[in-house]
Length: 218
Image 1 (cartoon, rainbow, N blue to C red):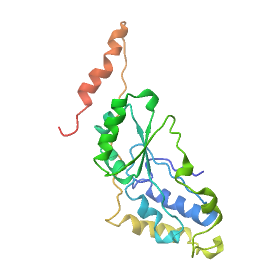
Image 2 (image 1 turned 135 degrees about the vertical axis):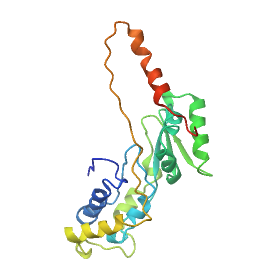
Image 3 (image 1 turned 180 degrees about the horizontal axis):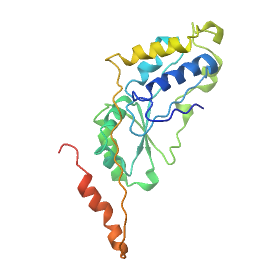
Image 4 (image 1 turned 45 degrees about the horizontal axis):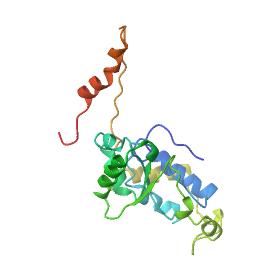
């Protein structure tokens, strides 16, 4: 497991660490199956291009891009974060999660929004995102038989020096074709309450929402 912190792996702020991490996995670990989990407000539009960079020697074969949907809160999030549109547009499988805590109306409304981006999306209604991975990955075949023409050992992959890799990534980040826009700006606030009535606190969320929330299209 490799963790890349400090921000979204698809943002320019840590794009370098992400590419370096993939390169290290490709040259040292050479996994049979690679699962990449991005943060909630990431823009994953460039993932397929990243996996096909020449420095990876065509090692990665992109399978599916999953998008986990919190059915109960999806519409509120969709109206708040612009990055969700790009996440939906670039994904192929949609996990409608927390169906046990959502109404059928909420689930169908989420699906209706997603269909606006895809003519035939794949939906899976789940609890705890329990998804049958065997429906997407043939672990036995893929882990035992390398792709035709692929290197059979790490020694056959030319390894770049750290300086060479840094120079390559610098040139890559200068490309105007990359989707390296920063994630949505998140705002947090802190309040101090000196009152006595609990009802005053209960009114805060709605008061804050009315002050800060601006609906889509306004």
